[in-house]
Image 1 (cartoon, helix red, strand yellow):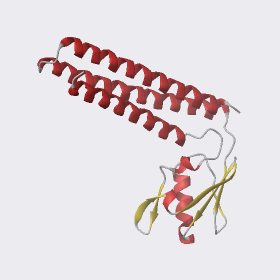
Image 2 (cartoon, rainbow, N blue to C red):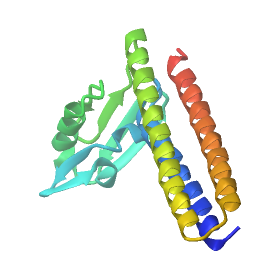
Image 3 (tube, rainbow, N blue to C red):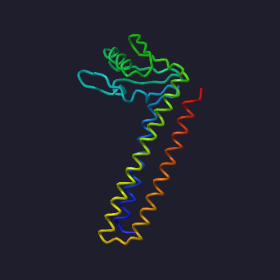
Image 4 (cartoon, rainbow, N blue to C red):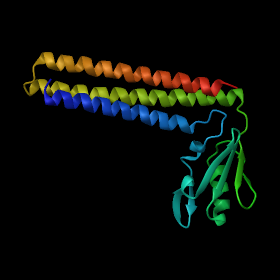
Length: 187
């Protein structure tokens, strides 16, 4: 294989690995009835005039499977943290005792579980689309190689290899989705 073909294969692998990694980061944010600090990853609060991620203004602890405790380093932001959690509409009811914010994770209803599974499937479809877009872009570049004088056999082999890599990543995404769906639907 030429250096161009090897670079395209490397680009394919890297792009598809990034798509799967993004899916995994997004799925961590979808709670499955267990306490996890990752559900707060998208929440930012006004911290002295700067929008700051919640994880950077205090400690987020999980004392047990159904409780999250947030302890800001500066108690004056407790109200802002509480408001941000309420505004995020995560289905939590934070309790502010003046020093910490305690959140009890309510059990998921069957309807909420089904909604979460739909969201998981939507995230999975987005990841599959990202993988297919990487494949499409690489195949377009491979066709240009033919015009640049690279033998057709080599381009065909490159296309087969790219398809193999694509199939492997789509299969990996499906496994991740099945595992997350099972996690959500387990009562």
